[in-house]
Image (cartoon, rainbow, N blue to C red):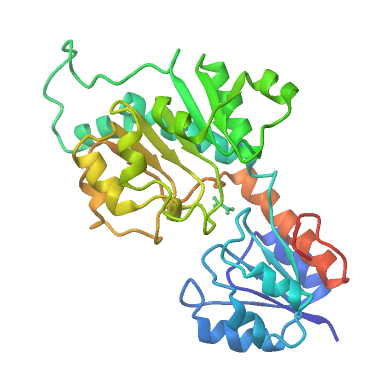
Length: 322
Ligand code: DGY
């Protein structure tokens, strides 16, 4: 009798083929994300779970599990899983960092380029038939990146990769972390450590690369936004809850800061009626940080490997907690 594996959404064909060789596989169909009641009843009977960022695997869900050995999430973020509780229950948790580093850094940099040169805004102007002025001195001007300071909050994998992109565009790079990175890393990235206060007050662009935790919850509120330069831009590809969205809407409307580029939101998906949608000085992406064909396939491979290891009672390649 094969062990049972449940997927809250489908994965690439090659990944499903692999899983089906070894396990009895069931894929949730219907409402996405999977309703909690269904997840709670499914988790009772399975040995392995493949989940996605919108599936809340909290204490209550984990407590329903009877034989669960491993939770393998198709994401680098694991804030949707109560990893502490999984650890207590000796359930392995696997996730997919590294393979999505480049794709997410690329997306952060594309938001930065887009908002600084008003590309999406221009696209909307044309699509709405509003392109009337041609090549005037003040028409649709953006700002240069060369010589501007990019403040990276969280110089981990993705933050460091973003720094490489920024270096190639001749930007000055500063960062703030709980700890300094090594001198050699600072040197190779041309990145200078600054206090949080300095990063906020002196950057022309701030890119957020910290996880959502109690400490970072709504960190970017009006108090912080007001400390930023009026000409500054805020980029977020980490987690939406790190920003107080209500405050950001006001800050963008009143031009407390110049603009923002967001791939993540407090509650996703956002609707076409969200206050951000009415603002011209913001670029919005539908949480596509890791969304390239190549990266998503690599994530599927790791998700399967993590699951396989956990099913054997071993530590996943990328493992949180236990
Ligand atoms: C993740 O994997 O957690 C990312 O947010 C996806 O872009």
